Image (cartoon, rainbow, N blue to C red):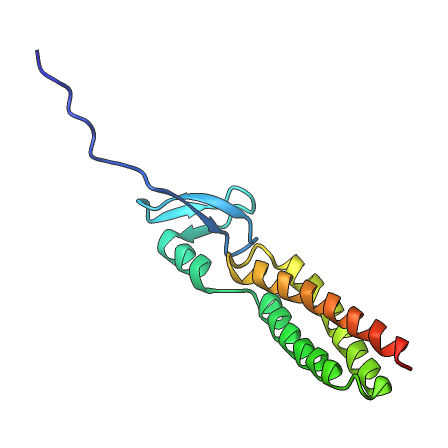
Length: 141
């Protein structure tokens, strides 16, 4: 009686994001090509894996840049607390920029595994800081 040999062909299912629609999909990394089950877009496995690792959508990149600019305004408003009107101005600008970057980051959250949550958290923290400094500035008038 012979023992059956186990098949050496193994599938390696990995999670990636579709380049076209941004949906998280399961891909067999042993296959060269695949099709997104959501948008029916064909893709090359190697390219979609690289896209998931490194690329972010322009909207997410813009959200991160706007968040960084907002951080600058909020930091300036903190140091301007001795001049309440200037502090209020910088806080309002920072809050406005956060109001732009947070929705951008949320809408584009599927495009990058690590950058999207980081940008959403950064924008949320900056919004809270801006509101706090704005309140302190108004109280100091």
